Amino acid sequence: MWLIMFGYEMEPYLEEWRDKLDPSLVTWVEAGLQFPASSLPNAMKIRSQFYQSIYEGFKNYDILLTPSTAVPAFESGVAYPSQINGINVSPTAWQAFTFPFNFTGHPAATIPCGWTNNKLPIGLQIVGKRFQELLILQVSKAFEDLTPWQNKIPKL
Image (tube, rainbow, N blue to C red; front, side):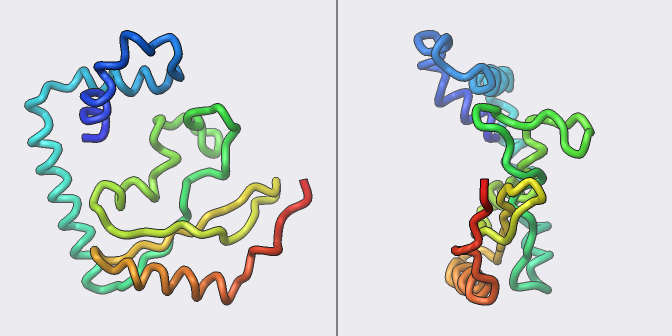
């Protein structure tokens, strides 16, 4: 769905701006343009089914905690990491924890929760049921109060 919509929105600008855009961005636009319009209703159906499975999971839980990303911060200017733990991955693999909830519309917050051995920040994602934004913010504040990080800046 994202690629289809992205391709549709960016297509009018592609010819004029192609040589000024990041090559990865051009690839995403072109990939989105490869899908026929008829694939959008099926993608929407799959999204509804996926939403239902997440909805069912939240019947037993109020909050879900996950890492924010599947990898630490990667080099500036790199659109996505090509490997995670030495394994070749798709361009979206690093977003594995955030994408499902962007896709379903569940509220989520990402807050700092630590540092890697290489002094890169690690994020904690806090996800809740639909329309539970206040609870997400309350849990975020409670975590930050219990584990203050504001003064813990690594020496670079």
